[in-house]
Image (cartoon, rainbow, N blue to C red; front, side):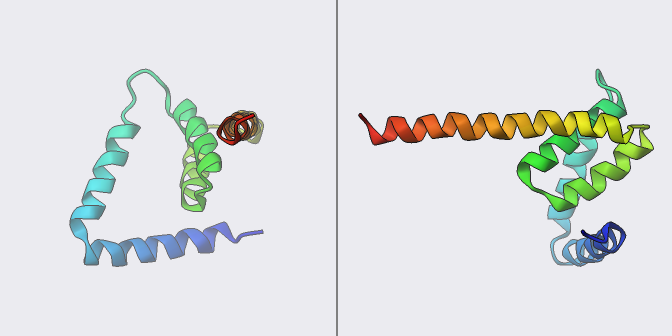
Length: 109
């Protein structure tokens, strides 16, 4: 398994390097994240559980790292995370099923 603390430290180091090379890109990304984190109708824990499900479906290790930390901070339990991940797994299977139907449609009769 991955050493998530070392991985996170490496991301921060590379993020600083990218910020030096392309500061406007990093500022824009930070602004996007800040806007998405604004609490209007969902609490922080719910947003983080959604983020974890999305992180799994997009296969983003950096997202997993960041949002596990944020979910824990927001009070999410491992059981709640597992339930959110169950939704992600079901959707991924559903997407594979749906796109399999696309293949059959494209292949014709």
